[in-house]
Length: 277
Image 1: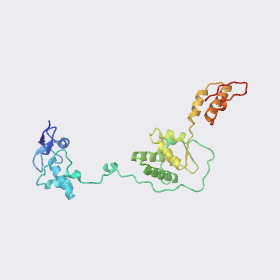
Image 2: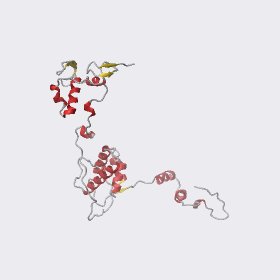
Image 3: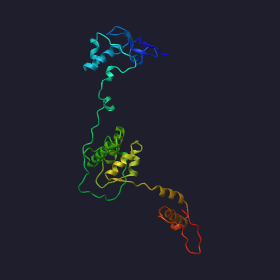
């Protein structure tokens, strides 16, 4: 059974599993064991001062608003404390910064408000399948492109309303730069075009498609799963048999309520068992 004891390094009182408390074990990693500049006690130091001096400086800094490091040379006493309890400087309420600001990275500004591009449109002479895999979002982004601005503004509104994490927002924004940086009025973005460009980059295709669908430029050109299944089943069958089997299979899937037309008898002299396809 553990008994209360005093930490041999910072003198904190509490239930200790080792010779030092948990805070001193973490504090001891950075530096050597030498006499402290403030209290002259020998132990692990950080910038020349032991953990007991640092705890006292942080306690005074929490009440005065000064920096703890600037108070270290002025210490004249030490207030002892209990081990494994939140000290005074941790109990003071402070605004918690976002992770990217704590790491020193500036917050990416929100896209400016935009409206759907209008005006006269030039219809395409013929359809061309575009290759978005050659577009580099770091080089080909058009900051003045009205369609890209409209898409980014729509993505920002959707992300704010649905609580997209910052990582998801950045991924969708990068995908929109690839797909919309060279967009002109009247064009559409097909699934067969965006999949080869976004999937290798591991960008979120589902949310990107949702944004494109909101602004009316997405075209899903994927074949229905039934068509793919039927094509596999009919592969290699003679044309005459294939035609009748294909008609029967489509009739089974498109038949409305009531008996299927395939199961009806052709005449009164023909007997056919009725049942679902």
